Length: 114
Length: 109
Image: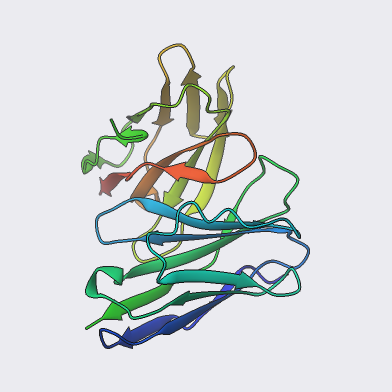
């Protein structure tokens, strides 16, 4: 079966532009997570969706960041008015969602803000 | 204090060597513990979960010391293919994972 997929794999944008990053979780996984990994840094939690519950947005670094998950499947992470410090790899993960189980990561989107 | 701390390395070892990584975590409420492996420019992948009683998977042994809030990973008979960054990960309840910055391992011929 297919794993977690993300698109685009690479994105170069200019400072101030908006970007949308997409994540397709593993079919049947109810939990979906977004993380980012900056150069030389560990993974930083951004947002978590579980089924139809309100998302845990506690990791979003500013109000320029938002995410949606439509139909309990595909998720889009939007960064408005991008800044150079937003440059990072944005990783999406999904899990079955019953709690404490393995998270499977997508290949990530490498975002570069010029 | 960082939530999950690891020695960044790199650890340079010859093939066949035994190498150990350590990790400490600050949140005593942490319930689940993992080691993930991340190859260069790739996504993290689960290597193994860490149980209180300690667990082994082939050449890999993981141990947890809750009293000291300390996790370890031992790799025996290192292979070239073990070269990667090893991420210590903790989880509170059934939610998000908190990652350490990773320890880089380089295994040389």
